[in-house]
Image (spheres, rainbow, N blue to C red):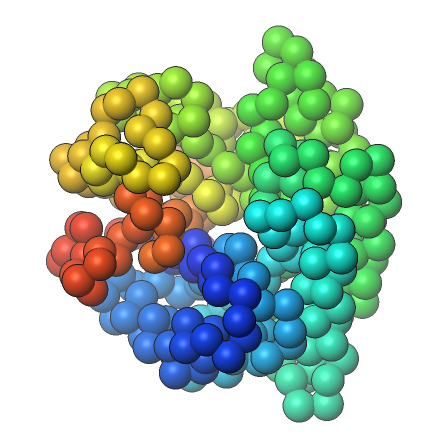
Length: 292
């Protein structure tokens, strides 16, 4: 199944007892995603709760709504190398638990080892080795592993002229089962009219140079100026946001041709990137993006 898969789902509250990390909150959000948008999967983003309870709640909500989940090992917004290890341990705990271990491999579609870990420079020289270890562990449970990353990083993820893999990209490919790509024209100097050509180019680049099963795990546009992620080149607003996401939907045949799925970033908690507005309504109401 290609085309629209679902939403990036930020869980940015570190207090594991906070309502946003609860089963009731997650289950309610999943139900809305499925009913109102036709989502079938959820890509967890920035899970600041470092305990297994959040994965248990995600699993229960996913089963209740017949949806898949992509868990994420998250480094965090601070330079603390102990935090990602806590998250990794909490995922392992769920995978081997007597209560959830049997179902988790069927609900967890794949797992992400970081979100832009190369761009953020997390884990230093240890990163590829730690990625390989995580992949090996998750492989024992039958769960594919990727890093969620922007491959348009000349000299690292891509070659200096962007035509092929760079030295880090080669190592990441060798230790990955999938591409979870960040196709982000918003951060690459594009206006909304230029955005689709950039995204199409990235999809083709992934397929040519990496050649692994591919998802666009993160892409974004701002629905208003002044958000905490900035305004890109300034071409932002509701109309641009709507145009940006409808371009994804209008190119369903390309997603099918290149066997690629996509997530909308984000459901909530990400300022002007959010689909859910502060009053609970949607930035783009009455819209169900196509599966291809």
